[in-house]
Picture 1 (cartoon, helix red, strand yellow):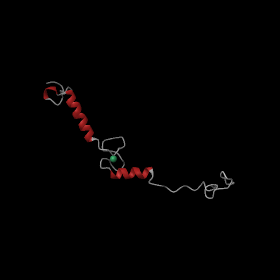
Picture 2 (cartoon, helix red, strand yellow):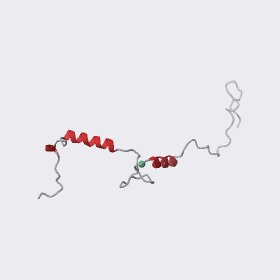
Picture 3 (cartoon, rainbow, N blue to C red):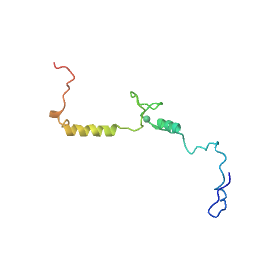
Picture 4 (cartoon, rainbow, N blue to C red):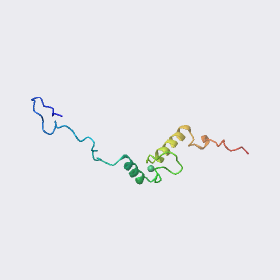
Length: 97
Ligand SMILES: [Zn+2]
């Protein structure tokens, strides 16, 4: 392949050289996706060595959701009035004596 000339008609050294080695893979620039997954699993205290939390069938997202979940249920209880004993829901799953 003939180098492309610039506007002046002269080839630009180093820029207009044809690329001839397309089969050589480029060196990796960082960890692979699998390596990043293993690093996250190793750093997480919530999941096992396979990336699953005990008792869960979906992969761990390595985020502790207990704080937001507790704040959410507290907000629901306050909104519904369940934080007051007279408004607390009764258990209807048990047979009445
Ligand atoms: Zn995890």
